[in-house]
Image (cartoon, rainbow, N blue to C red; front, side, top):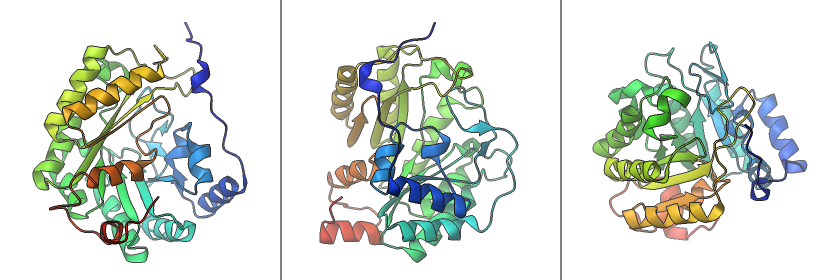
Length: 309
């Protein structure tokens, strides 16, 4: 049975000149955003602010998660010119904090880790004062792949656990909950000061106790920032929505998460991993004023000039 969408989950579609210009530039440069591929409900707001979360390594995924709108299948070979084009686009858009994510590429020996590294290096070279958050796949638990991302020094490394362990076989059958937790743990083991982030969706059929258990697991793994949002079914072929969670329940999870020790918790029906990512990052580094952390050009500028967003 289909669950009726409540009034609090209605949002304006992306329109306007800025949105049109961004879409045209992405098409011209053969670039993709997860905003479009993932049918994100926030793309109107983000595009209007001139912000996008870029999707690298193509728009075809080797996995078939039942909650995801990205097309599964056999990907094409990596585009070696993509890192340079993406850095040029970020520079041309004038954005100051870029979120870089990807499809999962199980067809590549390193899962595409070196492609991420090349993208980070190109952005650092062409627009060094741009902050970078990477939302990475699990790389099949390959520690050398995770290390290469840490060594490339983005501001934030994000890997989503997505849902509770009980639902993995149903909605994320090609992934492993413990392996996803392990990605966060590996990042912190390599560099305890690297800002880590993860996210979960509500409305897939989880219980309150199961959600809190995941939050506890993430804190133990060393996760700094947590995002919690409402699952929205992309099509009739995807996993159905079991429940639309009320906004006040998200507020309660945020309260619990902050009490657990997360440095920042973004929780709400429209929250997604990259939604207002820079705000979460700034609140996180504000908790320690950057003590001990790698000082990227972006971070130095934030701390010295107090650049507002």
